[in-house]
Image 1: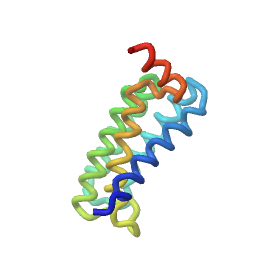
Image 2: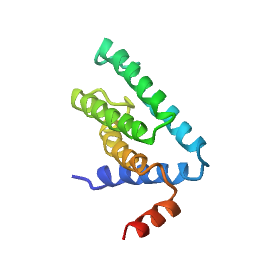
Image 3: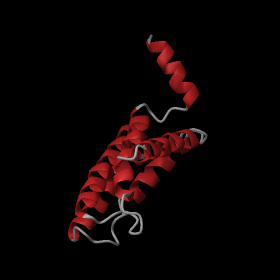
Image 4: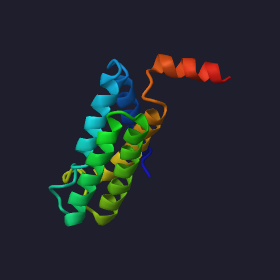
Length: 135
């Protein structure tokens, strides 16, 4: 298999985390909560899972709302979206209809972002300081 299929989504997740790290707190957390809430509606127009699409959007909206105050819930939202990506990929209903592996790539990218969220959405400098403190 083509390694870029796996590497590019990881790089995109790292770029996302790095770019978002430039946003000062608490705006960084709020921005990411809004984005993960929007991600919950990413597949709604495809309707592959019928009313399940609406239920998933409602769930992600609730998770995003709690995420306004909790990085952990933003991370949970990205992991929930990963599951949705996998289901859509397996069903052959990609996120971007003209890009067959778009849901597959999203399913790899989302956990990278979730891991960053579980660290508290820290900036690279803060992550390094956190790592040094734990040594």
